[in-house]
Every structure is written in C-alpha cells, then in structure tokens.
Amino acid sequence: MYGWIWRKLPGGTPVKVAQCVLIAAAIVAVLFLVVFPWLTTRLPIDQVTV
Image (cartoon, rainbow, N blue to C red; front, side, top):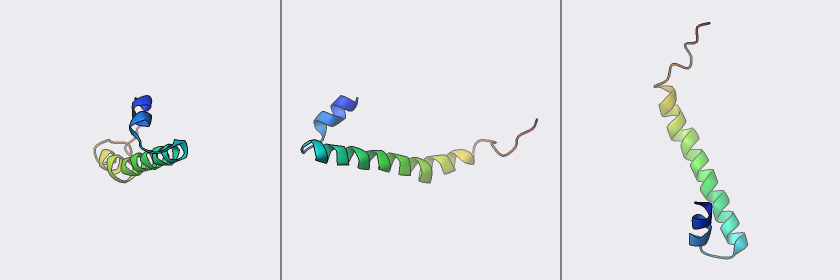
C-alpha cells in the first residue's frame, strides 16, 4: 500500500516526503476532529464500574 502511494505521488523525493507528512497529518486531524468525538458519544467510556 505504501509503495503504491509513493509511486502515485508526483515530484521528487523531498516533495513526496512532504506530501506524505501532509496526508498523515490530515488523517490524524480527521480522526481527532470527526471520528473520535462521534465515537465517544456511542461508547460508554465514562461509565466505569469496578
């Protein structure tokens, strides 16, 4: 999968590294801003009983 992404990105090695970092940052941002907040409303994480 990573090889496929590397081959599909345009530019030389420095440009590809920068694009990979931006893609990874975008994925992390979507996870923290959209997916995790949506998930916490559906999981009873706060209701822990011992």
